[in-house]
Picture 1 (cartoon, rainbow, N blue to C red):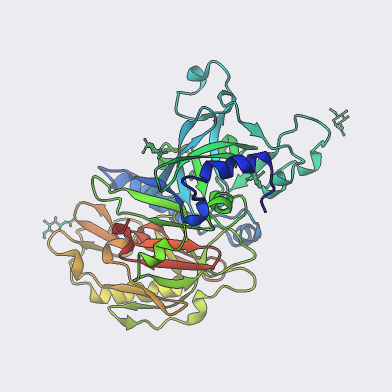
Picture 2: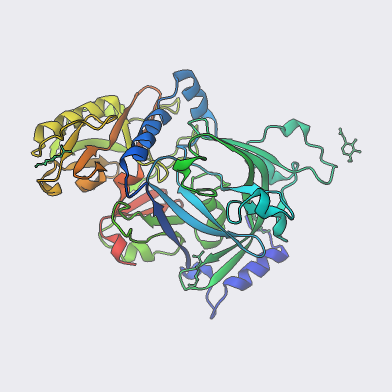
Length: 452
Ligand SMILES: *[C@@H]1O[C@H](CO)[C@@H](O)[C@H](O)[C@H]1NC(C)=O
Ligand SMILES: *[C@@H]1O[C@H](CO)[C@@H](O)[C@H](O)[C@H]1NC(C)=O
Ligand SMILES: *[C@@H]1O[C@H](CO)[C@@H](O)[C@H](O)[C@H]1NC(C)=O
Ligand SMILES: *[C@@H]1O[C@H](CO)[C@@H](O)[C@H](O)[C@H]1NC(C)=O
């Protein structure tokens, strides 16, 4: 609900251009940048893949507990990541954030330095909160503060003026960020090429950051995470109030060089669909115990148009909140239930016409030597989704190049009882995806990327 505060009028005024408002279908268009450990992918890629396979194989009791907490996330992780540049504060500071549909919180690495910033933090390595005249932490008693997990909820002194809202946000691999849940202005580019200034974007100003997913080499020098999840604090939920409750993206193949530009689009009217008659749809499902995630339903899998014998119950989302399939831009590989994975592996192995490499790449069950043969000879995988649609990615989406001339099946297995399936970003490449939150459906098309 929008209250008619002066800020709201200011905002509306900013969006009325030539008599048009955001309601006419203007949307935000943010370039998605990609980074990979190229040009020598093997080493770091493999490290990341090991880490990724740990990500969803945490001990049962811990997993259960995490799954039920509203802060669960698929963790921004993996070697192939997509980044968005965000300009925060006044004057604006440019920050590079991982675009993650598997988490809600938007957070940036913060520095409290006032003067000697270049000594403490090389310029461009953190958001310098004290250099922004419009920055302010939410008060711990403010209603917005109850939207983030905060460790000292009971110690909030409502009468004390400077009592910032502390947050602590944890990813499913144990990576953590904590600091002050704050607000500041953000400057964004719209589809019509104008700059829009939003007065109060809420985000975590992170002072303590730890864990493999959000620090170190695999974070690729990012300044934070742009959570695009379903929760009310996500970037998409906050901006949805202004631009419309949907977002879309096209993840272009990051192994191409130079990598083509992808875009993250937020809001917009019906234009995506009307421009794109070949769009297929599947319902977005809700798991009340894991409200961050965008779940979709898988009904079956085929290899070369032959339906595999997989018990349909392996795909189901049970009332305990376990199982189901999440579509996640922040995870690289795809994770499927053990039984389904074994059937797919066997079926693909049986139909592969290319020779294996001299040695298997560690961490993978199936690799092929593609130097002599064409990718098009690899078996075709397709997923039958709820709503009678079919998602049929090309082989390059599930055979990842681990070294020159070698590609490995980029799918890993998860335990059915406690885990959940994840359609990672590699599997999504080259497709246009539209997350329509109002209609609760996911649209996708193989042809949408070149239309804009
Ligand atoms: C921003 O301000 C508007 C108008 O005051 C308010 O309705 C909205 O909830 C605020 N957004 C956030 C994220 O605090
Ligand atoms: C809360 O803050 C006020 C003003 O700073 C102070 O007088 C009061 O003692 C504090 N209360 C508690 C319980 O700390
Ligand atoms: C916004 O658009 C301007 C002009 O097209 C461009 O120079 C700038 O880099 C864009 N900013 C972002 C954050 O994309
Ligand atoms: C792939 O096959 C070619 C011959 O077709 C061979 O020269 C090359 O060494 C093989 N690569 C690997 C990694 O096994």
